[in-house]
Image 1 (cartoon, helix red, strand yellow):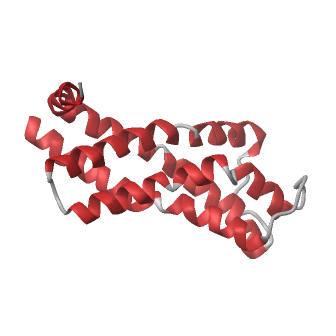
Image 2 (cartoon, rainbow, N blue to C red; image 1 turned 90 degrees about the vertical axis):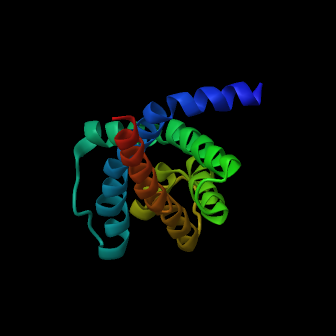
Length: 159
């Protein structure tokens, strides 16, 4: 059954790699918001942007597009590891970086961090723990770069 899946995956790779990259690119909006609206608020005492309640909700929803991005990129790196493409340690590293996002998504969410930094949290967590959760969000940047690169290479090969 797995062989059938990997064969299908290989046939559709020129579509899957760009789709994975596009899913990740949507996270740039979220990372910008996290930096200018949350991290800068804590570091400098005021947010550098305030998109308003509607756009804050939209941006929070965009963050959940990260779930299919994590899944598709994990499959991509398992596929490359299994095929022996690239450096095996790099595939493992990227699998670790991208899957660390689960910790952030379901343990200390952006909403908890935002409430913590603005003083409206229902419960208090240590500030250092909030900064760790924010840092986890940025671990996806190398994976974003790599998936975009893989998408471009894949599109060039299929053209």
